[in-house]
Image 1 (cartoon, rainbow, N blue to C red):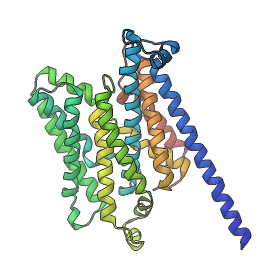
Image 2 (cartoon, helix red, strand yellow; image 1 turned 180 degrees about the horizontal axis):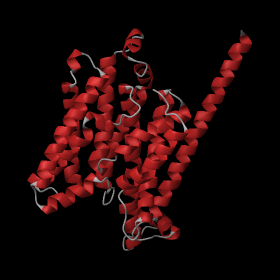
Image 3 (cartoon, rainbow, N blue to C red; image 1 turned 45 degrees about the horizontal axis):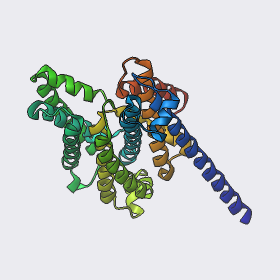
Length: 346
């Protein structure tokens, strides 16, 4: 009896050490790509100048200004956007028990899109910080609308929620296209810059509010890990274990709207991250959401920062938007992963 208990305890201890080392490696990769991101761009900056921008800042030096006020907030925003989408995607897959789910299922991307194109076309708002708030409001309204259409009063059903989200997304995207087609070329050009998913020109005024939303959402998400493990087992089993499914769904939806809505409003729809990062996380950590969420957060952060940095390297002297780079790099790799290993079941 004692030998069995000891072997189980030793196995758990080894597993814990493995998971912790994995998180450390992911964290180091994130730091490495973040540092690399400070050096690359349409105007290359040396390591020496980048270091001096922090240790001996000179406001008259244009390279110091470039590093401090453009590349630093851009890199930090890439981390926050990536982490937000990864956590939101993991939660969405747990709730729907669908391995191909991403935060866009709740209509968040479509809601943000129609709000932003309306802000540009009807109110003439052209700066990022201005239409970002419209995008966040649109994402929130769309997410709440999906819950109402999905029949929250009659009990939450993953299939019904997915269908409601798909239906609302089609309608909102149609409205977006109508507004875009019937507007001036300038409206289309500004909207196009957002809709491909871009971090260009995002400064501290965008970074700070999104950081607050992301930090709040991640804190709530980490408190829901045990409930998500139970919900992922199915409605009947979760109910028999005493989990309030409606409460978990509502809190999880709030987290998804905060994380994915904020990230989408700030950087545009980067949909691939929320789908793939949780799969990579489960390949390493297994189905336990106490590990899946942190791994998803770090892996998605690495993916976005790496894609943004490589987009500036490959597109030099211009750049390729992060949304395009994520699809170009991640798509083939995800197909390879599916063919080589079976997707981890939820």
